[in-house]
Image (cartoon, one colour):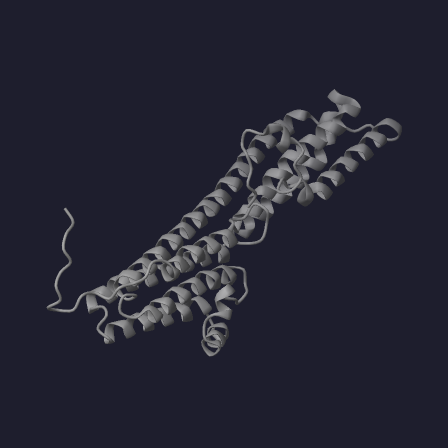
Length: 306
């Protein structure tokens, strides 16, 4: 994702990265060259125009199709951001509960839970991109377990199962009771729910028929537009076709780019930044203040300070 200041209009006017120019330049150039060819044929060979009213009617319908396309894509983009916001919250809650309930008894077990939670976040990001990786935790966690996680059919599921096993270990050792175990494990269950919802977005693109029809309509509209504008604009129809093609193809490409918000495009979600934020937040629960075991039965309670 590109960070920007919404008040800098002049800077945005000349921006290239993230502006769809690279993606649509060949389509727009082809349409513009075609408009020049139509102008040459009209002037030297065959004079042929079509009523502009047809393009006025079709342009209205095409505009509605493009609006629906971009709205549907942005809904997917925003849903993806909300899901990753939920992942941020659940990972913090998992680390918080483990720090308070488990770390005072067994700091190492708490550290293992936190590190596997961080590994899960990175595994989820890479899984949505069709890869298998657990990020920086691959150098910290046991090599055998890391290898098993990466060899698993679904790495995030394997890691979530491992976290639940660690929570069950804490229960068996008496650090937490059954109710507390179930409560903390709800965060792990939410991990699976969130990554499943993200996979639904990735694996369910917009219906093929809609995309095909929209693109065919765009091509027919822009390639016949010179014939509709030639009579009224003459050679001025070339920049007019360029402008219309740039706007229409750009809107369609924006929908394509944000339809799957978990990839590497300039306008996709900043998953690396989110994962790094989670990593830093969770590691702070390991490297932060010293943990103290709770007082044993019969120990004198600390005096309150008045």
